[in-house]
Image (cartoon, rainbow, N blue to C red; front, side, top):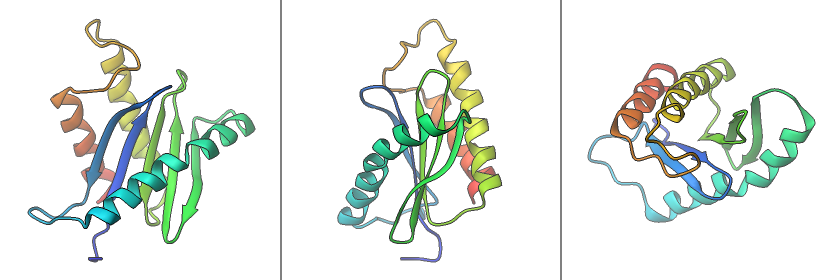
Length: 140
């Protein structure tokens, strides 16, 4: 892989993924399909560990819940049991926590919108833009 790792971020509701994004991908570059599928598999397979970790603490930021190869899954759990999950290869906990807090703020604003249906896929371009801006700010 290149020196710049691809980060995978996902928001998972009670029954399905609500939002997914890849960060730090070089413009015009393509990721090998098997690596992309493996990243999604690792992220989604950590859901059981997130549920287990949620019972062990009252914190919203669960830190690293799973490690596979050189990749780690960090998780933030909202009060409504929506999971923010980030697959990365060893970032500082402070930057990940700050990223999650910024995304949580944007998510709460989206959830307060009377036209957004709770626990449905997020299709808002403004939401996507703000999440990507937070990723550039904290994860680059």
